[in-house]
Length: 136
Image (cartoon, rainbow, N blue to C red; front, top):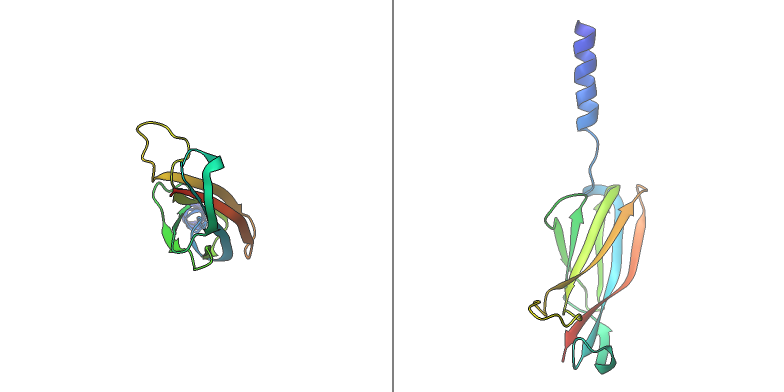
């Protein structure tokens, strides 16, 4: 009886120690936010400027969580990085002006989303350039 109780407690302890996505690891996710300014937001032919997007909010969601778990600002050159992450799935997103031109849509709040999986303990994932859009 004691052996069964011990094995049950040990099993519960091992399951509860399974690490979930989030902070506490050695991996990182980084990228660069680039901004394209258009005269007409829904018209890609009306570009007037492109540049690194400084001081933009970039969000990360750990695993299956519903809300953002962390937020960072891009640096002067549009770069961002989330450090010290564990293995698992992550959703990175930034808000952009809505380029679809749909009536009734908030033209300043279209999420640009990237989903990634960290599989190695010290993995460094580079998302490259993520483009957002604004109206002149």
